[in-house]
Length: 99
Image (cartoon, rainbow, N blue to C red):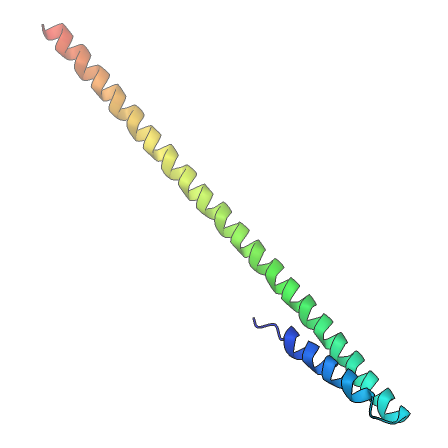
């Protein structure tokens, strides 16, 4: 999402400079335009904040899901190691009895 804050700031500055050479009615119209541009900038910032919040929530969910998968893999690996260790103990015990 592109935020066009600099363009709005430039527009506000240009409108403000133009006010100096205008009649009072024109100045009021320019001021209204500047106020509208400022409001639109605020809305854009709010939308950007909402979008960032949504993306952060999605990243958090992805991290949680990944952590769950890793935990399952670690659990499986430790189970496999425990089975291998038990098999090795049994083999060692058989070898010792055979001696």
